[in-house]
Length: 231
Image (tube, rainbow, N blue to C red):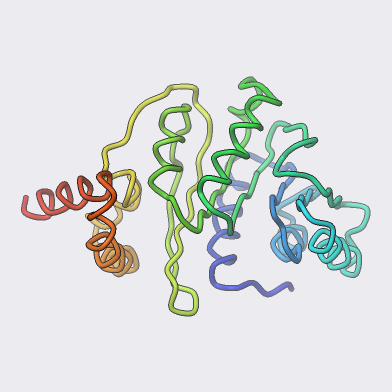
């Protein structure tokens, strides 16, 4: 079985949960690097087929070799493309966009909506793991009508990561500064005593104390957190 880093194991668990809900279909791994996540999904029958995309040829070749060597040549494809360009979304697809900046994730989803329309999006689950700009991602998702199914966190080699599992509803909304910076589902988990999330929030508070000087959203989020913690 393909071993994954702690970070990718967190992402994999979100894919696993999504698959248990929506039924069989493809896994599309955007920016697949070595193809390890797609390979694991195929090994555990979480994907009928896997599609990996890479913007550069070298990492695409690595993914292709890993999948072919494991015997999944007939059930996988690797495309050299930007994000989801050239990939027509289908019902029950799980789209994973992990390990890249939040602004890149926003750009990829925006283009996917333009290319596919909103009709199919209600039958697609997105598993997102931004490396930065989480607040921008959450504001974007709310404004474009995506609903949270879950959020999770992990600490991998002393670095914290978070993962979002969302689906399109078409009902646009807003998030507070606190929700944008900390995560709406993670806030609920924090309030319910989730120790891992509580550790993550301690980490975020330390970072936000510095960022608030130049970021009004972060400053507002910290103010909201302090008020809510006092309730």
